[in-house]
Length: 564
Image (spheres, helix red, strand yellow):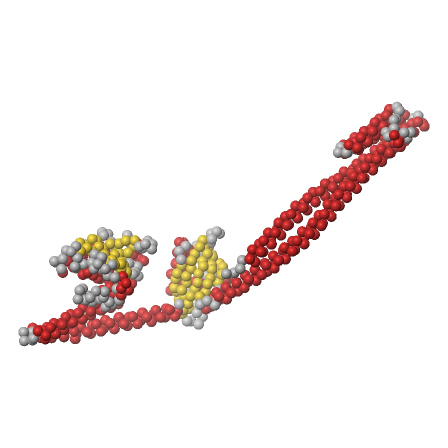
C-alpha cells in the first residue's frame, strides 16, 4: 500500500503556512490602521501649527494697527485693529476645537482669548503668567502661542516616534513571518514535488499497462442523441484492434462507425442509440475491414453514465475476437458434420437392424418349440437388444433432426400442448391415474414442433418416474426467476427424483441416473430437451431430491420474457 504520510505532511504544511499568512495579514492590517491614524494625527498637528501661525499673524497686524492709531490718531487704524482682533479670536475658536482632547492647550487658548479681549477694550492687561509681569501684550501673545506650538511639536514628535516604532515592529514581524513561511513551504514544496513524481510514475505505469493490453480502452461523451460525440480518452494501441490511430479517433469519434462493415453498421448504431436511451450496458460484435482488405471481428462493450452537463459518458473497450470467431465457425462446421455423420450412421443402421429383427422373429416363430430353454433365452435377449438399439437409433435421429431443423418462431399455446401430451400418455397406459395440473394461459414464442417435442420428453419422463407412486402428480406452469424479471416454464413431479450430485450428467446423451431395468429409456430425451432450449436461445436446468420428485425448468430465449 502506498504510504500516506507525505500527503498528510504536505497538507499540514500548507495549512500551517495559510494560518501564518492569516496572522501576518491581521498584523499588517493593524499596522496599516495605526499608520493611518498616525498620519491623520500628523496632519492634525500640522493644521494646529498653521492655526497658531495665523493667530500670531493676526495679533501682530492688530498690534501694528494699534500703534499706528496711537501715533496718527486716524480712526481707520483703530478699525483695522478691531478687524484683526476679530480674526485673531476666530482663529482661537478653531484652535480650541482642534485641541479639544488636550486640556492644557484648551487653557492656553482661553487665556489668549481673555488677554486679547482685555487689550482690545483698552483696559489693564494682567500678566498671563508670573514670569510675564511687565511684558507687553504682544510679547505675552508670542509667549503663549510659542507654548502652544512647542507642545504640538512635542506631540508630533511623540506620535511620529510611535508610528516609526510600530513600522519597525511590523517589518521585524514581516521578516520573521516570511522566514517561517519559507521554512514551512519549502518542505511542503518538496513533498508536492515528490507526490507529483509518484503520480507521474503511476500514470506512466497505467499508460504502459493500458497500451500493452490486448484490448483497447476508450471513453467517449455523447450529446443530442448521438449527433455530437467527443473522444475523452483512447489507448494508443488502437491500431491493434481497429484500422485507425488514436489521434484519428480523438479528431472524429464517428470514425468508429464509418470503419464497420456496411452490413453491421445499422445494427450497431441502433444498439448504441438504445443504450443511450436506457443507459443499459452496450455489448455488440461486428466486422471491420482493414486497409489490407482483411476482415476482422471486434467485440465492443461499454457501460454508460449520465453526466452533470447532460452528456452521456461511455467507458468501454474493443477486443479483436477474430480467432474466437474462426474457432466458433470451425466448431459449428464440425458439429454440423458430426450431426450429419450421426444421422447418416443412425439411418444406415436401420437396414441391418431390421434384418436381424426380422430373421430373429422368423426363427422364434419356426423353431422356438424345438429349442431348449437356454437357446430360447439367448434368442429372447437378441430380440430385446434389437429393440433397445432401435430405440437408441430413434433417439439419435431425433437429436440430429433437432440440431439440423430450421426454426420457425410463432406463438405456441403451451397449456394446450401439455394437456394433449398427457392425454396421449393416459391412452397408452389406461390403467394409471395421474393428477395433472396445468396453469392456464401458458404461451411462448418458438417452433411449435420443437416445443411439443421438448414438452413430450419432460412430461414423458415425469409420467415414467411417477409410475410407482400411488398418488402420482405432475404440474406444468411458469414462475419468475429470483435473478430478475425473466420467467421460466417448469414440469414438476412427485416421482423417484435423483441426487443433485449427479445433475451434471442429466443432459448428456446416453447418461442415465437410474438403472435401465427399473426405468426404460434411451438416455437421449433430456439431451434433446437441452438442444431445443439452446436453439431457441434459452436454457434448461433441474432441481430434485431422491424420493421427493424432480422439477425441470426451461426458458426459450429473450423473446419469451415478453410473453405473459
